[in-house]
Each structure stands twice: as structure tokens, then as C-alpha cells.
Length: 167
Image (cartoon, rainbow, N blue to C red):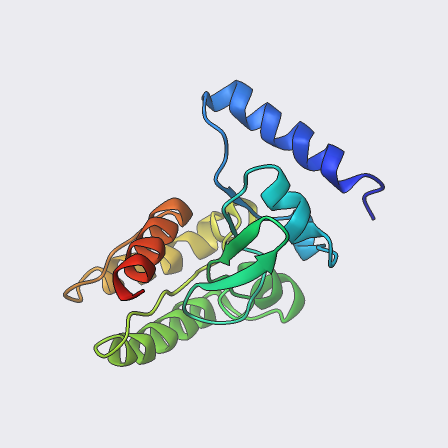
């Protein structure tokens, strides 16, 4: 447990700003360790979106004392830590699960946009006996019409633009 979340968030955002020259727009906490106060602390620090809640395949708003914090999709189902290190699946399962998930979201996305998150860690999916399956997922998904690969900031901008048009 972090004793002083606001200070830790400030130190982290300051360090990112000093290295990149830009303030971070998004946040993903260490090990999904939020408290009920974390969203307020994040918006206090100027964070606009968070990727800490494995809830959905579309962004949604979290109410904070400073206005909305947008949650962008995150996954534990397509995450190499639980799949490979906890559940001990073979690397092929990562490909199969990602493609089955993608194909369903692609169908649903024809009527309403979907976001598919894939959570990977280089020390897990980047090893020689697994990397080819991750690369195959990306190659095969790119064969579909209308698919985009976006950063968290791009997802946020799209969401906010859609929200403003529909309001």
C-alpha cells in the first residue's frame, strides 16, 4: 500500500514530464492497486484517463471531485501475466484467445465501436518461444478492414470527440 498516493502520483508525473517534455494524460497504476480515492488524486494531478479497470470494451466515465476521469479498456483475459504465468497456458492459447475475442468484437463493432485491449509484458510475450504468436495476432488483425491500432491518448480523443458530437 502506498502511504501518500498524491505525492507518489506527483513524483511519477513529474519524472515523466522531465524525461518526455510532456505531462502524461493517462495512468495505469502498479498492479491495479487503486483505492476509492485514487481517481480523485489522478484528476488532481491532471490525468485525463486511466487503464486500471478491466470492465468493458468501450470507454466510460468515472465521476471524480474534479470532473470525469475516462476509463479506457484494459483486460485480464488477454493479458500474458495471468495466461502464461498463472494459468500456465501454452503460447498458442494467447493467439487463439486474442483472435476469438477480436472476431466477436469485430462483429459487434459494425454497429457500435469496440476497443480490444491486449496486455503484454516484454519479459513474457517477448521471449523467443512466444513472440511469434503475438506478432501473428497483430498481423492477422490488420488484415481486417477498418481496424486501427491506437494509443490511450488516441482512444481518449476519439471518445471525447464522439461524446461532444452526441451531446
